[in-house]
Image 1 (cartoon, helix red, strand yellow):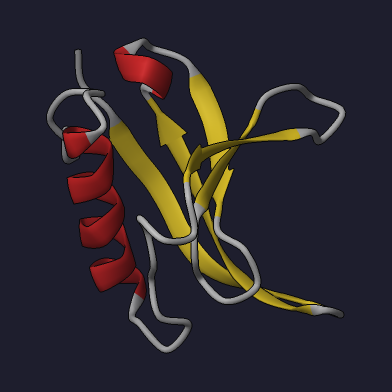
Image 2 (cartoon, helix red, strand yellow):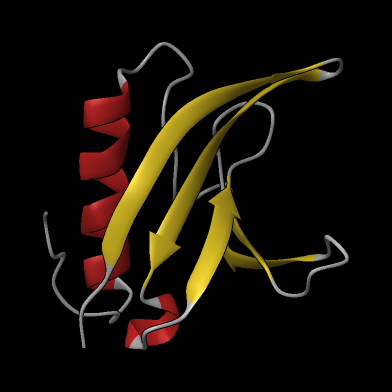
Length: 93
């Protein structure tokens, strides 16, 4: 079981900003999903359906990426969290 982070970006919205990730390897399987934090860069949610509903993976107390972080450091923090979550090691291109 492995995962790959295809993109990491800070998404500006009218109500704030959040980290947004596209990955392959949801639950260690070859499934593409979108992950995002809340407006403070805390918590982690996965988009569960195409209609845009999100399911919380990690609580706001257990995961945080500062909004001023670089995309590289955001990827590294996400990779560590997903590895510890049991999704397997990160595969880099």
